[in-house]
Length: 122
Image (cartoon, rainbow, N blue to C red; front, side, top):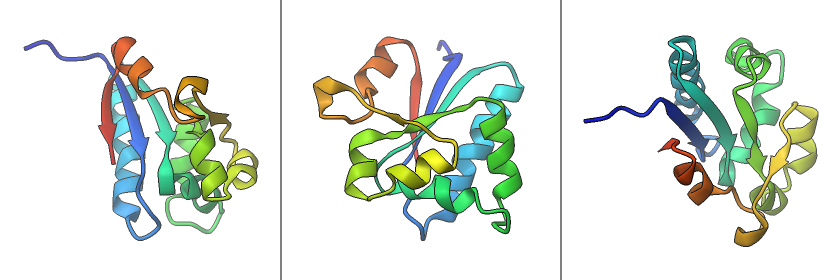
């Protein structure tokens, strides 16, 4: 069985699922550190995480900053950030919005798969 060398972590975890959000960052960083190509994006209720994790007093702020500075965080869903009213907070946290016009501003999920990424949704 062939193993993908490209992964996209789609963090959809809501605010009660801190473990899922944090493990998306941890697993992404681990794979990146081992030489894999990794992208991390926030989707759905997960678009609330950049604001929360960017707060200096958050226990996982250092991890968030490491992953952000490594360039692994590629963005948050444009459509979902509008729905959850998080677009401004995401941008202030260093996370741009991304969206596909064919899917109404949502993440280009099919394009990730076409580009050889293995999606992991948390």
